[in-house]
Image (cartoon, rainbow, N blue to C red; front, side):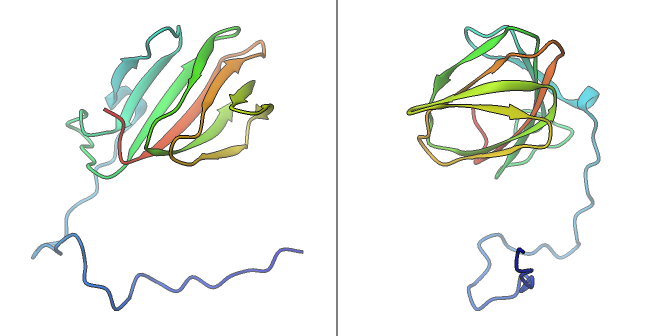
Length: 140
């Protein structure tokens, strides 16, 4: 059985790296339709930058959320970069390629990719593979 950990809160002795504003900011609530489309080189899938510096409706500076739509049989070739990423498989199934092995992924899987981790994905199913890509800091 997993041990439940207690959230310690955000209080600490370290000084804040982002100054606290005089007036608390309001949230920005957006949908995929509010996002900015992005095409990836050599891939026939399409991303939507929902939370990203290029999206004026949710201009995050420290993280990004991209919905990546991958049709059946489409491949995003393996590559690596210095940003951390997490792939959350929202719909469908596929195969992720890493430097030393391949692994099947499906709806409900979270795949943490540390900096410089070689990774690619292929939709091996019969329906659209939908991946939420969380990146910090945002990719250009």
